[in-house]
Length: 293
Length: 235
Ligand SMILES: Nc1ncnc2c1ncn2[C@@H]1O[C@H](COP(=O)(O)OP(=O)(O)OP(=O)(O)O)[C@@H](O)[C@H]1O
Ligand SMILES: [Mg+2]
Image (cartoon, rainbow over all chains, first blue to last red; front, side, top):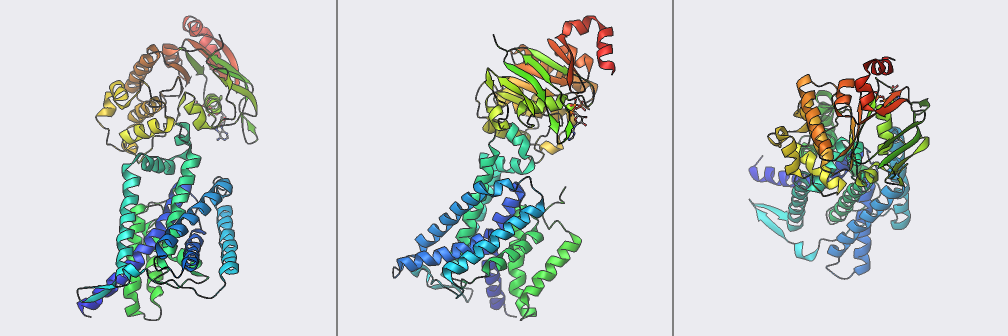
């Protein structure tokens, strides 16, 4: 294998990784703080993609429709997250995990069918925004400018996320809520709204990722389940509830998928499942996670 | 004048198992009142019912003339009641100063108690401000949990068994510090099993037994009549 080829596989893995991180980090944060595993997180991502397509469609033939569409999609999903948390999710926190899973799974089915009713089952697509239509040549490899943009934006979000969690008052409160919700409330914090905030941010990120993926991947029914499975694998590898674990998990997933294609061309996902199985056996709580109490 | 805090006829249960059977008590501003009683008589349950962490089936909690029964704990904290839990519950993966910082942010009650002021009270904490809460010794955690609650500038401090499981030297130090808080004018409701610790601080005492108040009166009575004290705590 020549270096150039390896480099291009590496970049393609990196793009996958950044998207997975944006999605899995929200899933992981909601689990770490709210203690609910939200199956519908992938559905929020899919709806973000559909809404972005819809707005682009409305604004066509404007060429710059993509940017407002992406922001609107993320905003709309944030509002959806707000409603879901305030009106429904909050009643789940003290229920058993089984009920939580059933509820979020019901959301997946309902919202998935609603999307089919509104947008049909045909695959839809969005073109790259004109400013990022070109490609750059790096080390002899052509990289689409759009992918480069996603990598930079995604990395910036990851860094911002980490800075907020570790260096700000809100971040400290969120970490404290993950450790002992009741105690934080008894100190005077309105933990209910803190939970809402966390859920809304995580929904926003899911919606944004859905919108950002549209120029790269076709929008199809079923992309919700596909992405949630991938996000689960990422957090299982990295450790559910761990920020850096999620980051590492996404990087590993992206690269294993990208290079796995070379080994099992028709079953590239197999290498990822194999990796997950190994990790589940030797370190069930993930690379950077910790055993659940 | 009405008391700062009035607890009227509290009945609290955990599911079907009833624990409090009509606890009534009053605390005036500036007083140190002790809920004295042995293991499992309902001291913590009373304190948690005041704090809104448990909802009484019957009875009222009245704070400065306002009925706060059924309020969420964060509202009660912001109204000026500070809670120090018996199991300490410092945030293990936050550093000492982070524990203090979020408490100030949570309560949103500026006042005398700032980071510097609590470090003055507990100099030992100042020297380990960057250490994680989970790596502190029991005594250090107890100091941190008291300091943390002070960051919310409470008018009433609910202190649940601060001496539990600590070495005698540490207990003496805490006694000293709590006495200092009391002399500073803070109103304190203390839950305790130990007679000596209680009598060293208390103005008045409620002796609890199986979820009821068995005896109440000035602590002087128990100080002077040890036979009475022994009898009250014997069961
Ligand atoms: N979460 C709970 N569920 C059921 N019963 C409980 C619970 N917590 C306490 N109890 C019971 O309620 C009774 C009173 O408990 P409480 O914790 O109020 O006692 P306490 O006076 O604080 O005792 P200690 O000195 O051991 O702290 C005990 O019999 C205890 O077993
Ligand atoms: Mg107790």
